[in-house]
Image (tube, rainbow, N blue to C red; front, side):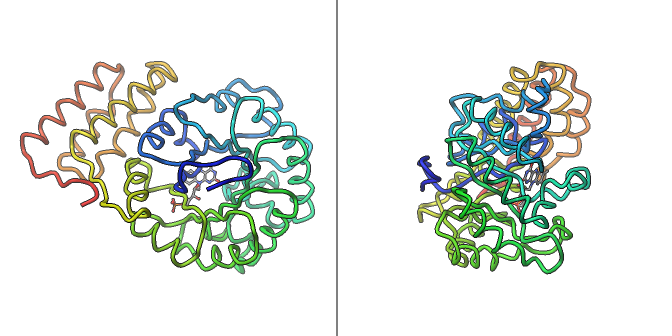
Length: 330
Ligand SMILES: Cc1cc2nc3c(=O)[nH]c(=O)nc-3n(C[C@H](O)[C@H](O)[C@H](O)COP(=O)(O)O)c2cc1C
């Protein structure tokens, strides 16, 4: 699969997830075979103002490549400048956010609010396209209002502006995450543009990805929420798409992933901050397992890596002794 000049190993993609798809998390997705990882959304204003915290979001490692960095903003000149900064950081793709429906973002005319200002969106995409040489993509919803009719027009306009691929999460701005994603909009966009269309929304199992491809003819699938706590979903989606036997994830593999995530987070943000972050994050990975509430309570107080590793090891040992933990994917 190609996005502009970039060739991906496969067409299974990690969605941008604010507060989640940071460097350590993206590497987990990549290790599970994901063909492209996306950063969380990064403020164009923050990049241009040289905010240290915002610029840290551009940190990357060769192990996760290729990397798409998503920026959000509404001013064409600021977005063009931010895109240049992203390109200079070594990212492989610049993605523009046309989908965020958080109040703080839409108040500034950014995210999904761009879907109601086509002229400004066109100016923005043209400015960003002119400012970078690497591939440019956008990620959008079906539309601003309940009609959800803006998506196809925006897709056509984006292609005319030189955008190299379009990711579609087919819910309206007002829907948030409620209801079901309307995959028919992905199919409608695929019929109208010649650039790759990336289908997103409600892939919770490998079968869903295959179904989305069959129903919409999308060129790639993007997984968001299911990857949180189950990054191995990528290996399972890949296998199903290739028609191979789906790999299952046993207890040992699951806990090895948890430990790697913790250790890399400590290396990436330092022990104190990583422990604060891991108090909630490590719980994602044990959802549904026996005694997970007890694990949650213990992990909620960690203040060092060693302490966390001990709690993880004790929990793993308890589960192994009791046996009967189902393999994920079976
Ligand atoms: C916690 C969270 C953070 C998200 N952050 C972003 C973001 O930064 N940029 C973006 O375009 N979409 C963001 N999304 C939307 C996802 O990328 C994706 O479009 C949506 O979750 C639907 O896909 P899914 O059904 O596979 O989760 C976020 C979603 C969640 C749940």
